[in-house]
Image (cartoon, rainbow, N blue to C red; front, side):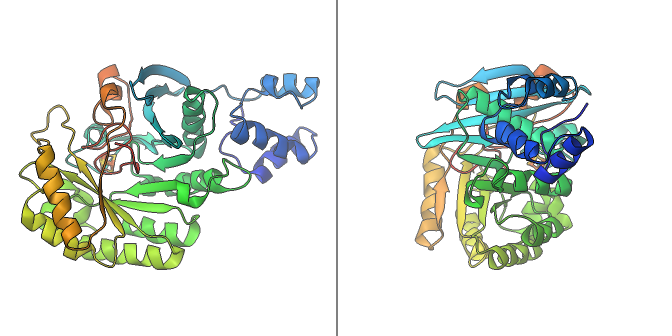
Length: 364
Ligand code: SF4
């Protein structure tokens, strides 16, 4: 079976040529998939009836929705199941201006960040670009077929540890033959894989890069985000400066606030100094506790005080507004609750789409 998602126009043209079809059929397929959200050939009404019937027997079916949770604010979390038994979470966030799709890049994760539920299961496997496209298509259906306005690769997994498929997905998200979003409307979040950041700067579309900082010093970050032991803060922030220079895009940071861990006044002072000139904006995410972890969410007043200290030092900061809080707390919890083999959107702190480590802009 052929998975027509995640393919470039040229790849589809080659495949269709092998079936004796002209190259322009690839453009038609791309339009159905990315503009209209249709992957079932039988519904592609501008294809000849014979070709529709033929493709229907050749094309892989959409991924199954194992579970769906809808929040009062219109956000929806899905657990998608793949043929090999792996399951991943993805989240549709509803904003005043439209919809954001938060997608997972891996089933499980090897990075072991302290706040994160997805990381607790370890890495199950990388997701393909087709599977990432499939998450956007499944979420789009939840939006009544309306296109999503933003895509954030902030779900389960570390996208830069799955570089080839993540790059392919980013190109399909931003290219005119794919979902067609401006790179400004696409965000990739990383826990800090420096070689991946440099590769993204040279090979990827100039999407928004978001780095999960969570700590203003190496000793603390070594504990909270273990990849810091390999790529400490000085290297990470140098890579962020390089990304900003190479792409002309400001880099943002996520900082999950855990009571008594990284929310002290001295943490705010250090964070402000550390990020000056490298990070354009910090999203503060009050921790959303996950089962089995001792971290606590700070009081709202403590979060506001932390933000004020950053602002007073000239650091741009936002406190992330939690969306979809009633559909499952920290990412990865749906998969864990379902006993699924893999996945998820997983970070410590944030609500759906807003993980501690990688959290979608403007969501929770
Ligand atoms: S926060 Fe992200 S990188 Fe860290 S363990 Fe969780 S999914 Fe992996």
